[in-house]
Amino acid sequence: MSKKHTEHTILDVNEMLDHLKEVRQNGYAYSDSEIDDGVVSYGIPIFESPGKIVASLSIAGPKERMLKKDKSEIIQAIETAKKMIESQL
Image (cartoon, rainbow, N blue to C red; front, side, top):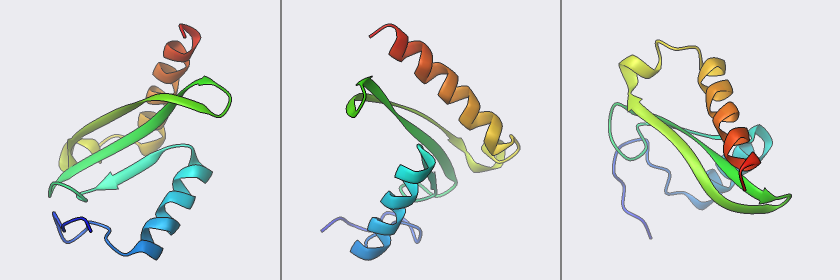
């Protein structure tokens, strides 16, 4: 069993499964203070071929700075970087 890093750390199995389902639907992961208080992060998988994840790309920063940006802008930026990386694989 994992340890609770902050009050936002997901330890409940059903809550984690729901979170993973949401990640699959969205195509990216979002974390708000789950490991470190005040840190927001986004993560996205990098595919070598359909269905074969070979890496991931993430961005993280202080919550007060990250939330000043529009979430869709951040997602679009990491999606663009992902496509550039995937095109080189």
